[in-house]
Length: 404
Image (cartoon, rainbow, N blue to C red; front, side, top):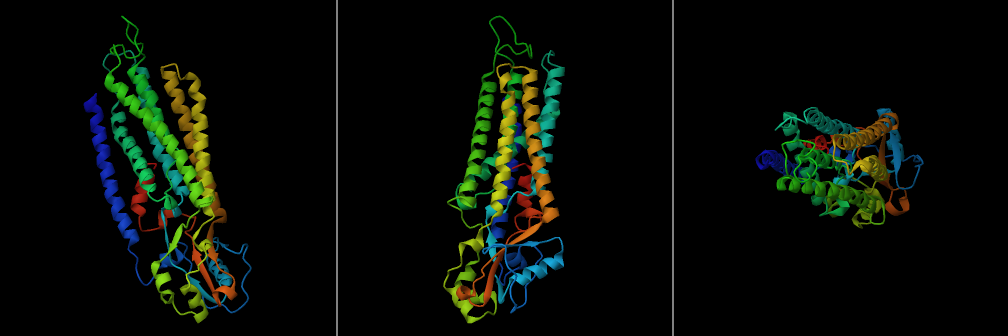
């Protein structure tokens, strides 16, 4: 048994090692900034372009600290955007931190497909076990040993991402709040494989060849339980962290200005001396570097965690019965809750992105403070999320495919 389980673990650790290398590579690439500023530095993935000097009356913004440009007509979007940029338009180049890469509809759709294969694999294993429960020395299906290292890799990658994020709570990355259901289901499957605790001079009702509970199996089941419970608790902690540091009292900057902007504002291009003096004073308002979209991402993940927890609790009434039906009920409930939560999240965000897709721009609007300029920062587009952002894309897609 130890040999059988050690092989998937070695494969999983190899996958994690490759991911760590990719992470270091992507992080290095992300921190090397080019000068002069690139289109992404200024306009992210929105396809907006620089505006000419606008000496006419500006368009009224919905709020003082940000405006929204509709992307359903690209030319009109650019025109609308430029109408807000009164005086000399100055786009401040920014670097998004990890928390700025919100989970988008493609993220949830890929997670749904990825976890669906895990649930189908566990269902197939359960079906084979139930069909052949009276056979002696029946091996687990080959598909189980194919998916096991993948599931171990996804759990390890999630934990690594979570704990690395604790080093900087202000840029804590968005991690899945439903992946805890994977080890949760392995608990019941392992208990079923182990069989009920035998009475004296009797054999278990499931797997007659097992006359005693293996110490190794007890250890594996105990570890799996600890992993599942801890991952649920850490998922809740992740939701709380994002509320505190992206929305609540400790809300931090999700976008940071390039150091060159503060050290040498003239690098932004020609501008009136009053605007240059304002930039030199280092009094840029923090509102230019936050994002109201964090509330939507927080609400989505809180909903996912709550929904999956609720449906998993429904099967607890059968928790004392170690049989096929209990394992099936737990798998059915968790799979249904997880897939439904991810599907609703993906459909809701794709409807928003395609129906009323928006590019959010934060800007100043008081010439008496900034001089005859409008200073603005542009947020990443909601349409494709990070899938059309080049740096770090490969690593984030791999994590997304693992359901992390």
